[in-house]
Image (cartoon, rainbow, N blue to C red):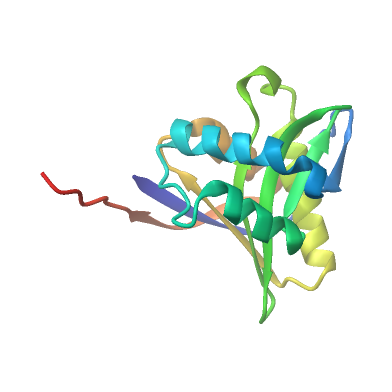
Length: 157
């Protein structure tokens, strides 16, 4: 998989669809587990080594997930504010039935603003180079490519 790493250069104003962002809580756990499992399959990403349910439980306790509701949950992302003023967004996922309405774009923009307001000096995220939709979303929000890497999975024959 070829990954493109992006840095937020300037937060752009984007169209905001109906609904709003909120911090995920324990009652959202099953929805997030299902969404991450779907993301892993669709993106052909490696699954969490500790298992999705355990990872989600740990990250929920740390307040690392953001949801967009309209009025039901329609999109989610993970966010991390790292010591030293750096923050990272990822993964970002909208189930197919909710795509094309601007939910992920708005969610990334609002979450990016939150991270900046919490002290992040730089906000980063990564995309699959082969996914033109996610790359376009992040460019609209104000992210610019920094570099690319290639990841390989080595498996026994």
